Structures are given as C-alpha cells and as structure tokens.
Length: 303
Image (cartoon, rainbow, N blue to C red; front, side):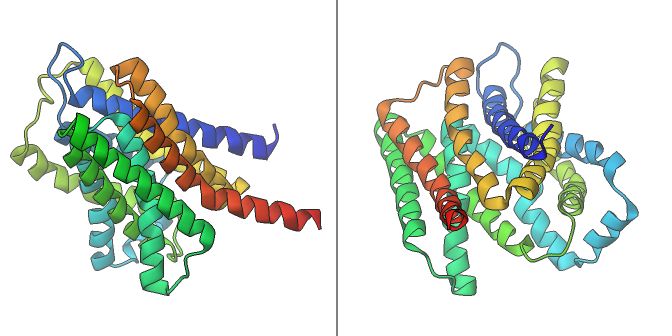
C-alpha cells in the first residue's frame, strides 16, 4: 500500500481516537450509567499506568538515556505541563462541559497560544492568515462563553479550565520543539515520571476506582491510556513524517466535528445552533494555517 495513503489513514484514525477519548471520559465523569462513575483522578491514573505499561516493550536504553540527559529541572517542567496534571485537568474540565467543547477548545487554544508565545519568545510575526485564524478561534471561544452564560453556566468553569490547559500544552510544544530527542523517549519518560504523582492524587482526591465495574475500568484504560496516551502519538508522528507537519495538522479540524457527532449519539449532547457556529469557526481557525501552507506549495509546484 502507498505510504502516503497509510499516513492519511493514520491521521484519520487519530480523529476517531481523540473523539473517543473525549466522549469516553465524559461518559465516565457524568451520570450516564447506572454504576458508580469514575472520577478525574481515576481516569488520570488509568491513563498514566496503561500508557506507561504499553510503552515498556518499545523503549530501549538509548531512549532512557536521552530523556535523562534533558536534566531534572527540564524533566520536572515537562512532566508538569504534559504529565499527570495534563489529563487530570482535562478530565476536570470534561466534568463540567460537553465533550464537543473540549474537543474544540483544546486544539484551538494550543494554536492561539502557540502564536502568542512565538511572538513573545521569538518575535515571530503573525501573518494576515494567522491573524484571521486567531480571530476565528477567539470568536468561537467568545460564542462558547455566551452559550455558557445563557444556557449552561455550569459549563463555563470547564471551558476556562480547558482553555488554560491548551495554553500550558502550547508552552510544552514550544519547549520541546528544538529538543533533539525521539518523541517516544519524551512521551514515555513523562508518563513514567508521572507514576509517583498518582499516589498522592489517589490518596487526596475522590476516587471510585474500587466501586466501578471492571468492564468500565478496562475500557477506559484502553481508550485513555493505550489509544489516546500511546497509539495516537505513534499515528500522529507517522502522519507528520510522511505528509509533513502542516498537512498532518489538518486532521485536527476533524476532531471537534467528530466528537460533536459521537457525543450526540452516545451522550445525547446535541449542540444548539450557537454551539455549531462556534465549533465551525474554531475548526476553520485550526485548519486555516495549514490550508494556506498547502495552497502556497501547490502554486509553487505549478510554476
């Protein structure tokens, strides 16, 4: 099979995985079922341990050595930004807000804050197309806030938490951008450094881990840990390597749309027109920089 076709299939698979992650977490965090629901702490612990165990057969000494060579101050910073606190805060946000909100706000806030941090750190100018993209994202976020204030005030804290989580992950992306290290080493190292953090989390935070059914625990370990925490990383890296990072970023556009559809089917979270407009604006804002890049490449190839 053509390698580019495989890369496209990998990118499309990540859309389904991330949509399943948001909807699955939302299901366990709300009162959708009859049994005791898992908490944010439970989902975080399952994700960290399941993904860490999944990585074990693929890691080599060179990966561990490369990660430790980053130095403990940088390792602690990366773990704080993308380790256990990252899914924990996402799950807290999902306890308040619909899954579609999370799927739109997280990637769009990463795009927004990446541009802002790039401007502040590297004096990187914001192009006209990037400016339009940021305007669309900002407008979509404002519409979500309007929805929260008018129809569902309970969702506002969740949206704001997810927005700030996106800012933190944008800083993480900026931090690792220039590191000469295998993504597998960084991801696995952060996961393993997060294992000790799960102990005080479990002792200090509410947990239904021993009350939930084994079927739910196993399914969430697979969805949150193996699929979203490990396999999605490989698929994203594979797609970016063979399609280019700009082209691969177009798959982000499908995440909020697919999550909204899956959330409507599985959770009964039907978006109203205001939410649909917000989702559309943010999806366009996410994809606009990549489409501009691809159009420029197309014009160059035609010359």
